[in-house]
Amino acid sequence: MNFRLLIFDLDGTLVDSAEDVHFCLNQTRAKLGLPPLSLEQVRASIGPGPYKFAEIVIPEERQDLFDEFIRLFRQCYMAHLTDRTRPFHGVRDTLKRMRDIDLILAVATNKPRRFTVKLLKDLNLLDYFTHILTPEDVPHRKPAPDIILKALEITGTPASETLFIGDTDNDILSGKAAGVWTCGVTYGYGPVELLKKLKPDFLVDRPDGISEIAASSRKERIPEVE
Image (cartoon, rainbow, N blue to C red; front, top):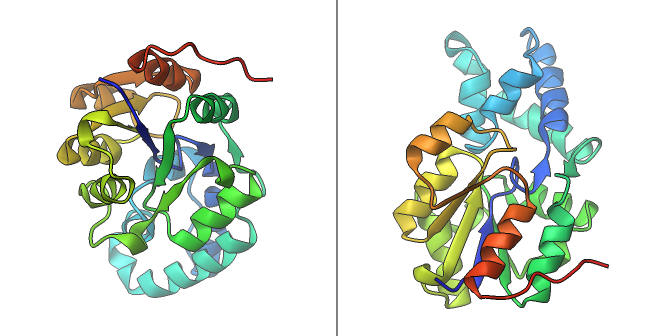
């Protein structure tokens, strides 16, 4: 085990975006005559991508609103993308440490590209990553392995030297299907018990645990962040 490539999920792993998603979801539901959802309900729905997300947050009997929901939500979300969204505590230092030991860093998310790139840019995280992979790059979203396999292809990295980090079952399933090492994070949106049942190779409760795993695999000393 000697990691060269670290691939990160976005929402619930690198950034806490739940409040902005919650705001726009309820703004959209109100316009469609639907009652608001709680923040906890929204947290549980983040991750599968916009179309699956819409299926979760629109009542089954009102799926006729599906296309209009997507349109209105995207309009609101682009305008409020980083009002309250922030990197999880410790993420920025973790990325700096990983960059300083010359690891390749990538993002693999079910969030559409235009939101992903703008969010990372607005939060001054974009420059840490050599590759940003979104649903537009692959035939199938996570939990399919496509997006992880694409990262291996474009970086020329074998699965045995790759660690995928995420907070939900979709992430762990995707990583396992791609044959890479997997790391679940318990500080995100996925139920911890479900993560444990999927038996990722590693489980961490804070971002700096990721840098410890990666540095240990290379027998590197973790550099101090100035």
